[in-house]
Length: 198
Image (cartoon, rainbow, N blue to C red):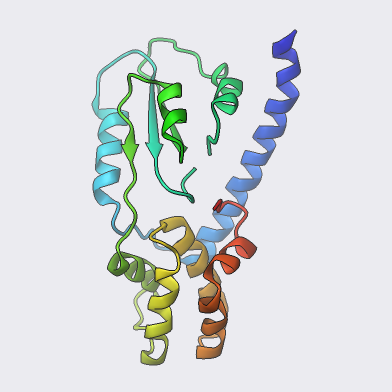
């Protein structure tokens, strides 16, 4: 009986996931047609190896743990609610979850090695923002200082930089416009992406 009660909640959750996926696609198409990956090459290689390089047949949970801006799973209760959807058919399936909470990662699978996501450096943050906004063009000299300030205001979070990059690529390239964003980067992120969680 309890499982039947959870089904409407799961349907509602899946609808929310679809909405977030649509927002993600809009955000990515507005930033650049080129895929930009900065500072996370090693993370991607390690995750790729864990997902497809191992030959284990049992179901494995791969928890990615980091700061705000990378989290889907926020509590052990929520994990309990969705865990029943993932059966272990002994076919080598992998489930990747992201969370800010180490205890959630341990709860999901205490035996699995957690993958900590590193924040981008100031240089990597500016490099990513520059690529998202200007692609192959050079940043005008008058926007470089405020651009670096905006990038630093994203606290090294690639998702936050992607949101701000999308916003900057859609507005006029002026010092005044960029200064307004630079004065409150967090507010600009919150207004422009429902997928970013502080």
